[in-house]
Image (tube, rainbow, N blue to C red):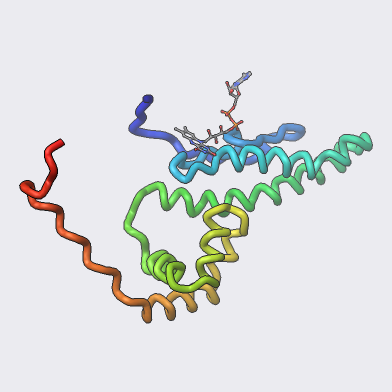
Length: 163
Ligand SMILES: Cc1cc2nc3c(=O)[nH]c(=O)nc-3n(C[C@H](O)[C@H](O)[C@H](O)COP(=O)(O)OP(=O)(O)OC[C@H]3O[C@@H](n4cnc5c(N)ncnc54)[C@H](O)[C@@H]3O)c2cc1C
């Protein structure tokens, strides 16, 4: 086991200089806890290939290749928008009222639950979950949700079976 007290979260311009494109952790190192780094690495490689394959195959001019690379940068913003929220989550602060409402609503409302699932899978853009319609519906559902059961008290020492 390797421990670390400070795992830096780094984001770089995916096109730091002409003719150079960064993918995976080279472009963006996130919090390892949500376990999404390998997905971003594969997806950013795919975005780069999709954006530039035709230009490279056809021997496009430098200007055309730069245009193609800018397409990669646009595609990479999908990951950066998720990463912005992941950085807040990495601070392990208590959820804010919007997060609390959405998480509560997701337990009771399949429409919200599906958006939370797609967001958590990084299958949908951030805006599919964080938009006024979802926030308003979540607040409405959460307000009507039954209170969660009170936490059970820890067993008294004499109740613990001898190990
Ligand atoms: C503790 C921890 C747990 C994680 N858990 C998960 C998880 O459960 N799920 C998940 O999806 N992600 C997880 N991640 C993130 C994930 O490991 C990374 O996001 C992912 O490996 C990035 O892939 P990459 O190919 O961009 O970079 P890397 O996997 O770092 O690959 C880069 C490679 O380049 C090599 N290299 C470096 N310099 C040179 C050089 N000069 N010449 C030749 N080769 C070189 C390195 O040796 C390395 O093999 C975790 C990360 C950490 C730190």
